[in-house]
Image 1 (cartoon, rainbow, N blue to C red):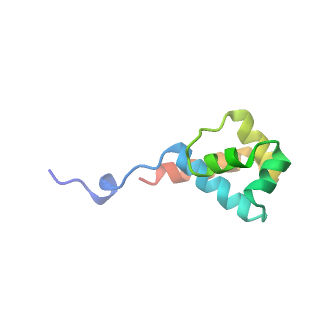
Image 2 (image 1 turned 30 degrees about the vertical axis):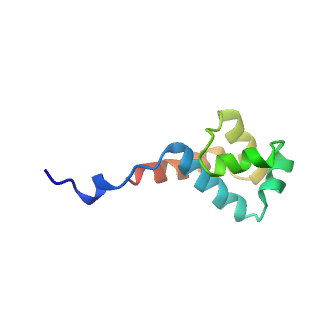
Length: 87
Protein backbone atom coordinates (compact mmCIF):
# COMPACT_ATOMS: atom_id res chain seq x y z
CA UNK A 1 0.00 0.00 0.00
CA UNK A 2 1.29 3.48 -0.91
CA UNK A 3 0.96 6.20 1.70
CA UNK A 4 -0.01 9.72 0.68
CA UNK A 5 2.59 12.48 0.78
CA UNK A 6 0.95 13.90 3.90
CA UNK A 7 1.47 10.62 5.73
CA UNK A 8 5.07 10.28 4.57
CA UNK A 9 6.20 13.57 6.10
CA UNK A 10 7.66 13.36 9.57
CA UNK A 11 5.46 14.78 12.30
CA UNK A 12 6.71 17.86 14.12
CA UNK A 13 6.98 17.30 17.86
CA UNK A 14 5.42 19.85 20.22
CA UNK A 15 8.89 20.63 21.58
CA UNK A 16 10.31 21.32 18.12
CA UNK A 17 7.28 23.41 17.20
CA UNK A 18 7.57 25.41 20.45
CA UNK A 19 11.21 26.05 19.66
CA UNK A 20 10.39 27.40 16.20
CA UNK A 21 7.69 29.66 17.60
CA UNK A 22 9.86 30.91 20.47
CA UNK A 23 12.74 31.73 18.12
CA UNK A 24 10.42 33.51 15.71
CA UNK A 25 8.78 35.63 18.42
CA UNK A 26 12.14 36.38 20.07
CA UNK A 27 13.70 37.52 16.81
CA UNK A 28 10.70 39.68 15.97
CA UNK A 29 11.40 41.79 19.09
CA UNK A 30 14.63 41.66 18.35
CA UNK A 31 16.28 39.95 21.30
CA UNK A 32 19.22 37.59 21.55
CA UNK A 33 18.90 34.37 23.51
CA UNK A 34 21.06 36.02 26.16
CA UNK A 35 18.75 39.07 26.32
CA UNK A 36 15.63 36.92 26.60
CA UNK A 37 17.24 34.79 29.26
CA UNK A 38 18.31 37.80 31.32
CA UNK A 39 14.88 39.45 31.09
CA UNK A 40 12.93 36.29 31.85
CA UNK A 41 15.19 34.84 34.54
CA UNK A 42 16.35 31.81 32.54
CA UNK A 43 19.88 30.98 31.45
CA UNK A 44 20.67 31.55 27.77
CA UNK A 45 21.60 27.88 27.35
CA UNK A 46 18.11 26.89 28.51
CA UNK A 47 16.58 29.30 25.97
CA UNK A 48 18.74 27.66 23.30
CA UNK A 49 17.68 24.18 24.38
CA UNK A 50 14.03 25.23 24.18
CA UNK A 51 14.54 26.70 20.72
CA UNK A 52 16.20 23.50 19.49
CA UNK A 53 13.37 21.38 20.88
CA UNK A 54 15.68 19.64 23.34
CA UNK A 55 13.62 20.60 26.39
CA UNK A 56 9.91 20.70 27.00
CA UNK A 57 8.78 23.94 28.67
CA UNK A 58 6.52 23.88 31.71
CA UNK A 59 3.31 25.86 31.71
CA UNK A 60 4.98 28.35 34.06
CA UNK A 61 7.86 28.74 31.58
CA UNK A 62 5.47 29.38 28.69
CA UNK A 63 3.68 32.06 30.73
CA UNK A 64 6.96 33.69 31.87
CA UNK A 65 8.45 33.79 28.38
CA UNK A 66 5.21 35.07 26.85
CA UNK A 67 5.03 37.85 29.44
CA UNK A 68 8.64 38.82 28.80
CA UNK A 69 8.00 38.88 25.04
CA UNK A 70 4.74 40.82 25.42
CA UNK A 71 2.52 38.19 23.81
CA UNK A 72 -0.33 36.10 25.14
CA UNK A 73 0.62 32.55 26.15
CA UNK A 74 -2.39 31.38 24.16
CA UNK A 75 -0.90 32.91 21.00
CA UNK A 76 2.30 30.93 21.46
CA UNK A 77 0.35 27.71 22.06
CA UNK A 78 -1.91 28.46 19.07
CA UNK A 79 1.13 28.80 16.79
CA UNK A 80 2.62 25.58 18.20
CA UNK A 81 -0.67 23.81 17.58
CA UNK A 82 -0.67 24.94 13.93
CA UNK A 83 2.86 23.63 13.40
CA UNK A 84 2.15 20.30 15.09
CA UNK A 85 -1.02 19.93 13.02
CA UNK A 86 0.94 20.28 9.75
CA UNK A 87 2.03 16.68 9.22
